[in-house]
Image (cartoon, rainbow, N blue to C red; front, side, top):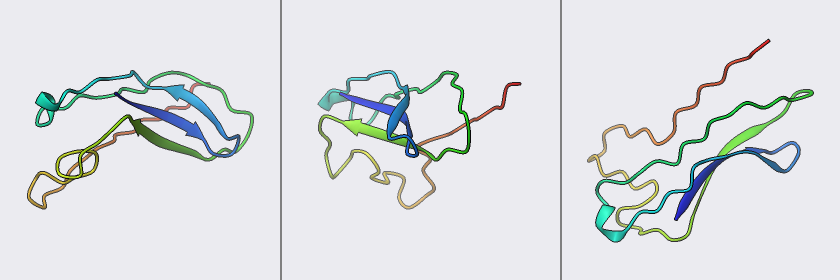
Length: 84
């Protein structure tokens, strides 16, 4: 099991939860995504982080291991829009 989320560092709180996902040992090469999406309102300047929690991981082919022979790997894409 794993899940990504948007964390408000300033207020020490979770702002948006991602979709929980389950990956079996058979999906090690395919993987899956925990998508974080939503709207929220802030009252002032805040610091946010994208965080990702997992139940377990493998050092050889999990979370952050570059399996592209040194080529660029993108693990997170963030799009933020201000809505007035």
